[in-house]
Image (cartoon, rainbow, N blue to C red; front, side, top):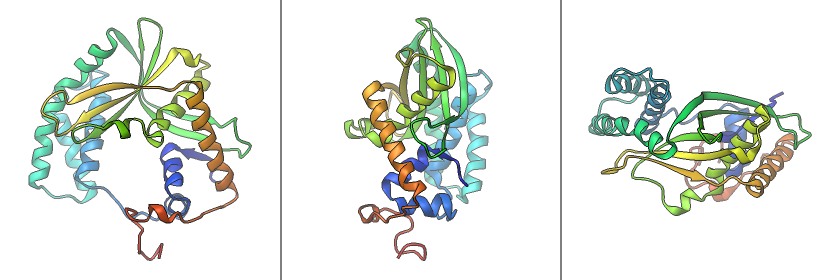
Length: 253
């Protein structure tokens, strides 16, 4: 029996429980990737290695990773792909300076850290599984959980406050603090936007609030989902059909 849930799975359940069943139980996979997912993964891998000072030539490093991701997704060379190479070249020199600008002096605590923590708020026996992109510690003794997000020009106010986006960091903080027995007051959470089409300031790091009430609300969403998942309630939420990859397919008619 499946005994863990990731935030991606939780978010999919919130969109449509039946879609979550197709993807995570039936293992039906319709979407294998495109130029945008390839770009995001390659840039994410670059960030991961930049913070550990493992990159001599960021352009070459990105291009090699991008080529592999494009090949895996079955994407051929196009004008858009060429534009993306140039955009990555514009973004990469701004990543490390932005970290220093926002946080000052810091030490890297972990990169791509796996979480696999018991969900003590639920009696379903599930663990929470996730990967935290970056955790740093600043001179004031605080820890900062950072998640890289690629986008076009940036996020509007609505997206920045969308609970099903920000709850990712909220739950990462909750389970990271439980893992290390760290006081949540010493931990802050941030998104780092890597803006592909912005004319300037292509890297933006902004703080996401993750106080006790928000942790409580996010935990309620998680435990409620686990109750329904455990009872095998795979209801179709027709409100999510319009943009669903399974719409009018053999899997969901």
